[in-house]
Length: 444
Length: 32
Image (cartoon, helix red, strand yellow):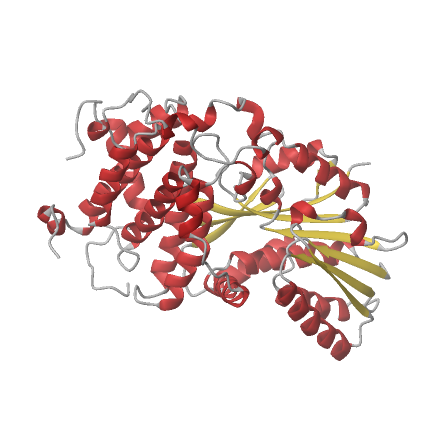
């Protein structure tokens, strides 16, 4: 079929990439200001350049435009619901994609190595150990810990693992694998599954007993309960004004702005007249009663150690433009990682990009309020939050860092590195920080 | 590199380039 813009086909990869960035930001600004006709035109242009099977920028552009279109579509809840009414979500597919994320990237492996080492160190000499896994998706981590504990000079402890996950199948699988391993190693072991989303977790169900030494692990999970109270009531990402066709003042001459300008104007000065920022205070990205309450409840359990792994990027900004530019950088780095390890035609790569990253991007860009779960924040935010909740940082040990570094060195691809930041670990791709791991104890 | 796309720039590098272009150009210049 013919393109109305034949010259677009002539663009070289670099020019096309730059033009895609420009179009994406243009489009996002139109979406943020409610100028839907212009957003539609930009989306149409992008559709001639983007491709989920193309180079990295073409791929990213596909997912960001899908997310922007999703945000627009939510203005018409009826149409939105109808279009999604027959959607089937397959637990088995989700499990598969998570496995691929574990395999293709070193991030989870590093997080697991550091978590396990922190637990082994904190639990030295303890005879009754209870571990709470707030995102019990990956049995590999605990199987490795069982092996570490069975090799302790003082012998293995009585071990109980409480796994929290919203899919029963995931917990069943984990229970099966771990019980088998514990039997093989002859470790007294109990698995306590809790089928629940983290936000609905009943702390009582964790059944923490006196006399047991407690460790809590949260891998890429805490951010899901960061929605502030004011935001929880909101549903639609766009205000009704836009439904009535009132286009907000267009402050930029969009054809003439570039990424740097947009970033300077929109992000730094809050230039964008994004409709979602009007009703929330500037502090609301920091204050979350739900998170405070949850951390206080964890503190009340007196854990010996808490290990937190999180995406190290701020995707919890108030305005759409802020979230778009930050997440663009973050996911560009992740897509670049895949470009360096897998071929463009790899179906597995396509699945991870679409079903994992694409869905996260959609959530960051298209959702507001309680629906927006992917509220990733920078390490310094987590440090402040955990400190306020009464936790003190436990600097990661030399041995723990050594293991993490070794793991990365053994990796086929040399763009990864880790750096130490205030006793915590940040895993980077080139210069870009992507994931953080930190350990905590209760302040006395 | 798996792809025979010799002049390929990473997405990260493209974003950096776009940001640089944006901050060095005056506000009334176009991307192209």
